[in-house]
Amino acid sequence: MTPQKLICFDLEGPLSPQDNAYEVVALIPGGREIFEMISRYDDILALEGREGYEPGDTLALIVPFLIYHGITKEDIRRVSSRAEIVKGAGELVMHLKEDGWDVKIISTSYREHAYSIGSRIGISGEDIACTELNLEDIAAGMREETLSLIGDAVSELLGHRGDEDDMVKFLDRFFFKLLPDTGYGNPLERVRVIGGKRKVDAARMFAEGKGLKLGDIMVVGDSITDCRMLDCVKREGGIAVAFNANRYALPHANFALATLDMRFLDLLCEHFPDKEHMIETVQKWQQTRGIFEHDPGKIPTDLRTRLIDDLIDDLTDAGGFIAPYFHYLEEADKGLMEKVESVHARFREKVRGIASILG
Image: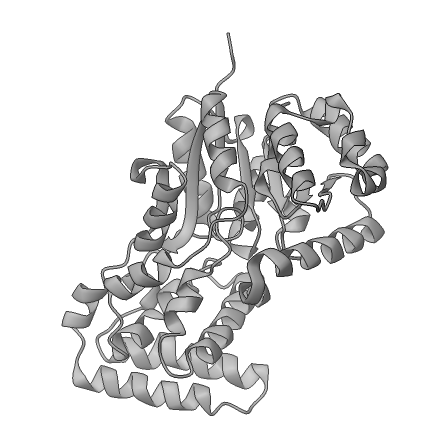
C-alpha cells in the first residue's frame, strides 16, 4: 500500500517572501518602526516563555494600532495582492499534488493574505489554517478613551529613545494593564493567532484528518513561529525542514534547505518517508555542491528529480545557477550550526528582502 504523504508549509518565507502584517502596518505613519519594536517584543516574550504568549502574537498586538488608523480588511487584501510568490513554490505544490501529496498551509497570517496566496498556488481555504481577524467587529466596540490611549501609545513608541528593558516595561503596561482597563480586554484573547503551539495543533489536526500522526508527516518553516511545530514533528519521528531559516528555527529542524528556488525541496520529498535515504542524499549533495555550482550538468541522476531536471534546464538557459545548500542537522555541532546560520541568513535576505530582519 502506498504511504499517505502530507506536507504542511508555513506561508511567509517558504511560499511568499512578504510579511503581510509588516506591509499592512507600513500603511500608517511610523508603522514599520512600531511593527519592528512589537516584533522584537514578541521575540522576547516567546523566548522567555511568558505564560499565555505564543510566538507570532505580534499579529494580535498590532490590531489596536490598525483600528486607530482605520485599516480595513480591504487594505489587507490590497497589500496581499502585491505579494510575490517564492520562486518555484507554485510549480512545487502542483508537482507534489500530482505525486500524491496532500498539501496544507499553516500560517500566522491573517486569513485575507493566507487565502490570497493559497489560491494563487492551488491550495484551497479548507487546506489552510491561519489567523481570523474581525477588524470591523473589534472597531465597532472601540470607545473614545481607548482610541485616545492608543494614540498616546503611538506617540510614545515613535518617540522611544530608551533601552530595550524600558520598551518591554512600557509595552507590558500598555497591552496588559492600560488597554484591558479600557474594556478592550486582553489583546491576546481578542485575536487568536496561529503561531507556536497552535501551529502544532493545526499540524496534528491535518495529520489526524488523514489517519496520521505528527511523526508521519513533513513540515516546512523558517522562523520563531515555527519552532514548536518543527520540533514536535522532529521529536515524533517526522521530517522538519528549515527553509531559508533564522537562528530561532534552525535548531528545531532535522533538515535545512537554503535556496532561491523552492523546487529544490523536491529532492527531499522524492525520498519521503525514507529518512535514512534522505540523510544520505543530503550528505552526498553537500559534499559535492561546489562542483554543481560551476557545472550543474554534473549533478548525478540520484541527486535529481523530474522537477529538478526542469529547474536546472531553466536556470542554465537563463545563464545563471546558484546551487542550494542542504544540511542534515540532528548531529550538527556548534561549528556547523554557525555555518548553516550564516548561509541561511544570506539566502533569507535575498529571498525575503526587508522582511528578513523580523524574527
